[in-house]
Amino acid sequence: MGSDTEAEKSIIKEEKKKVISLAPIAKPLAGKKLQKRTFKLIQKAAGKKCLKRGVKEVVKSIRRGQKGICVIAGNISPIDVITHLPILCEEAGVPYVYVPSKEDLAQAGATKRPTCCVLVMLKPAKGELSAEDLEKLKKDYEQVADDVKELASDVI
Image 1: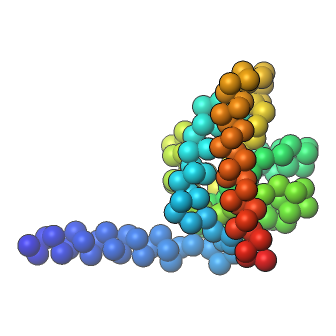
Image 2 (image 1 turned 30 degrees about the vertical axis):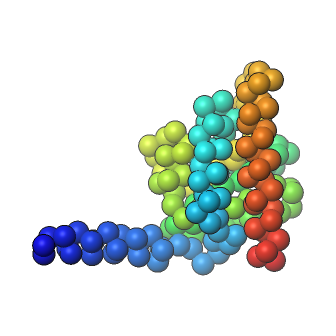
């Protein structure tokens, strides 16, 4: 019985660490429901090659005028790595949202390496999507984009 309480304590401590390590600029932060939808969208986009991973790729894509949804991890250290991204997204008119964990973001993006940010686009890097695949991706994309814009308007 003592080990159960120890296990429970370690789980609670782990959850507290996730919350504590969240950056103070991580606003708008996605709720559980939006996180789930966003991660599903990222998984679909990764399968269709419509995803840019990492700060360098995301910044390059936004500066080139590509549109999408920017998803930024909130537990990045040092925080200076991502502080310029929200400003860049606002100037380009790209909706952005924070999620609590870079590990979860990487897992959704089909990579083992923790990822600071991803940009979900409707066009793949090379080639074209079939009309059916594009329609499915666009439906999920628009739903998440609307939720992100609504969340951003609540923060401001």
